[in-house]
Amino acid sequence: MGMFDRWRKRAPDAPQRRAPDGVRLYAIGDIHGRLDLFEALLERLAADHAARPGPSAHLVLLGDYIDRGPRSAQLLDRLANGPPPWATWTLLRGNHEQVLLDLYTGSDGFLKRLAGWLDFGGRETLRSYGLPSSLAFGDDLAAIGAEIERLVPERHIALIRSMPLSHRAADYLFVHAGLRPGLEVEYQQARDLLWIRDEFLASDADHGALVVHGHSITAQVDIRANRIGIDTGAYATGRLTALALEAEGRRLLSTHDRD
View 1 (cartoon, rainbow, N blue to C red):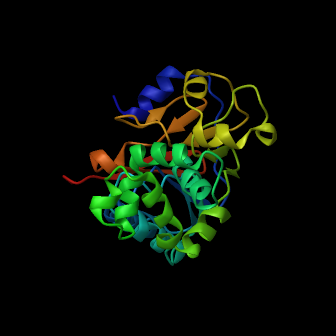
View 2 (view 1 turned 90 degrees about the vertical axis):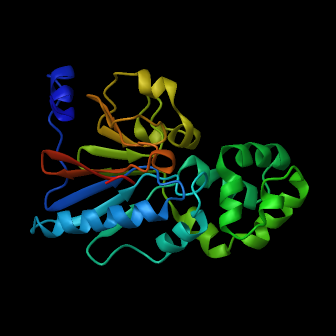
């Protein structure tokens, strides 16, 4: 039984959802510095789109472009250069980008936030910007923090600042982490859109749209009646996943190191 058959069996009464007319949407999960996988997936999506002429293509990237993987700086460079010629795109902000933005702008509790960021992937990001390993993987927080503004170009910070926290397209709502159950979209807090996990994942509430999200890693795409999670842990698994949405149809495409 296929993944989409399991979804139909688990949620037989779920309302039918439609993508915008005349548009093929491709949602892409958390990349985390794996520029190699992103480029490989773009090639697969380009071929998929070319094989199905008709609709225009729009990519929605769900955030978390940096940290953990080895080429965060280079991935931001690629994103700053704009979408591929066959598509338009929306780049959503993830919680990892938000932390870098907060650090760059000198938020309160700088050293505590810096220590937290380094522990969940910031060291790899700083290495991708050229910080020596002896400093990036050392314990001198003050010295590391002093390098952030020098190393991270304003172009990357401007790109992160420009990233919205959500994107609505017909019956689908794209966010990085999820929604606070019971609140209309316009009343959602930025922190929930970027960070929420358990309350959202456990909820079977109808959010007024089918929510497509990343942030929470699952071995397989997590398809529920009210949400679809497509973070398949690319930085560790080598599998970067895209969800293709067109009219009432859905398809999954991915890349893997062993493919």
